[in-house]
Amino acid sequence: MAKLLLGRQYYELPSKGKNSMNSAEQKEFLQATAWLRPFTRWAAAFSIKTEGLLPAPVRNLPLKGIKLILASNHKKTRSSCKSTR
Image (cartoon, rainbow, N blue to C red):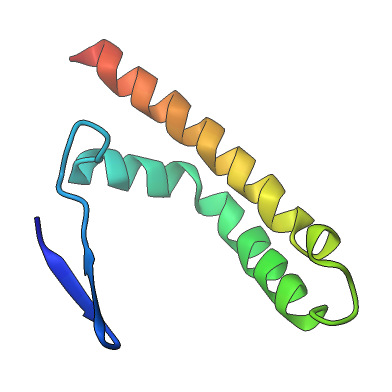
């Protein structure tokens, strides 16, 4: 397992296991979610700019929504790739 040095600590990087995507799957996932990138940028900017003004759960709500969309899209992509093998 590879290790990454950040600061003074080493962190173990996950090895490519059954849950990792190959390059074709990554490319397909990125193309399928390209429409979401502007919304992701906006949600991150909103969260950063409203720090101190809004409570964390409200501030991060747009990011949580995007996370759910990406997770469901990833699950859909993974299931369609498995059925073609």
